[in-house]
Amino acid sequence: MSDCSLPRRAFLARAIVAGTTAALAPRDLWAAVGSRLPAAPAIITSERLRPQWPSGVQTGDPWPTRAILWGRTDRAAQLQVEWSTTEGFRDVRRVRGPVARAAHAFTTHLDLHDLPPGQTIFYRARYESLASPGAFSEPVVGQLRTPIRATARATRPVRIAWSGDMVGQGWGIDEARGGIRMYDALRRAEPDVFVHSGDNIYADGPLQAEVPLDDGTGWRNLVTEAKSRVCEALDDFRGAFAYNLLDANAQRFGASVPVIAQWDDHEVVNNWFPALMLTDDVRYTEKRVRVLATRARQALFEFLPIRRHAVDRERVYRAFSLGPLADLFVVDLRSYRGANSPNLQAEPSPATAILGESQLAWLERSLTVSRATWKVVACDMPIGLVVNDPVRDGVRNYEAIANANDGAPRGREHEIARLLQRLQQAGVRNVVWVTADVHYCAAHHYAPERAAFTRFDPFWEFVAGPMHAGTFGPNALDGTFGPAVRFSSAAPSPNRPPSDNLQFYGTLDIDPGTRALTAALWDVTGRKLWSTELAP
Image (cartoon, rainbow, N blue to C red; front, top):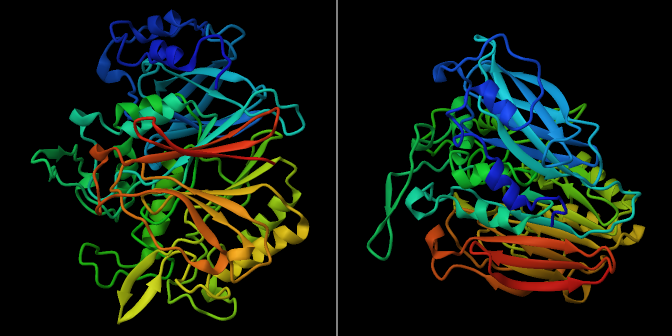
């Protein structure tokens, strides 16, 4: 999907400098890749004085002229970045970035700006120690592609990939089995952007050193201190995010593909809502989920390449223009929801909230004013799949939108019914939904002729995942909005390991000539399982 002078994989194979040229002094190494920065006061060769890159680099939240460049080091140090539109770094731009400090786990977020739209951007970054000026890290190199402007003419396809659910159900990094192979599969797919649909970490899922497999062998996890227990302190959540980035595939992916991330439940604790109390979970000394969620949110913003909202800096929901062919709308079904319940309330109220009034109004307005051919809603939970919450006091509660009642909208279905009806009234067409959460892949078509609620236009919902977690499914469908399964690939038995290759991602490809959208579902080996082409 790249039109740069050197193919993406070839460039990155040559350009991941860290660890391959350690014999060079930092100043010499920077010069070896073409830097013309002013000379440092002295060449520092002691390894202990150099800042390190324990987590690689990431980019995210791309706009036509901006993108977030994320990094992490191991000490107080200032980020320095060079970027160019050529692999040889001709006409290079230099940016002195923020300082990594302990208060934010030595992470940095640089909002690169004045980038040319629709271009492949090559970048290299390094840290300079504050305690030892002139002591530079080895440089890390990567690339991303900026979207074209919404008013421009599309001349190349757009590819969006998505998936979710990372290091869940006890399946961590087993380096002997290739580590987190999904990151390699996604890198090879060469999407313009990857949407992480939530469960970036399993804060409530400690790892054991070894998990027995059916064939008599064992899955041997890399286990860190943070992943040996549930996350309660801020540093626990930070450690869970840092764990995933120990994987070499994850670091190569981070240097290759920009990420647009959202969150779901396992960034905090299974099936959480703000008012939840973990009264019966003996693993936790902090029982207030609202407190845990505050810490988890801080770690999320520290460790993912997310651009903070100008006014509401804690806001996760946001929108992106990927050019005239696609707008992307990222929602948050966690922060504003009411308590999980039987989900059968006859009238909408704060108790039935899943998006919440402000976010729902934002989504209605944003979809209505969008002029892109396709409107992609990245939702962290599916609409029609029934997701149970544990039975409490003999009562069956529900975790997602559906309530296993095929009749008129009730409970959280009220907000979805309102949204779908408003879109029909406004004549908004070409809306597709992508999601993860349920740990299998599926394609669902929603149509009013099959539904109890009929005031909406037909639409598709595509489900993909897990990325690296136990595989389950399939779930039952709720008939309120008339879903039908067009494809499904689930586990033959619960909690199948990543070694079974039942790890899934999806892609949306939009053709610039026909403007048709092709949705496809893939497994971790890169095998296409199913696809369909949708005319605009």
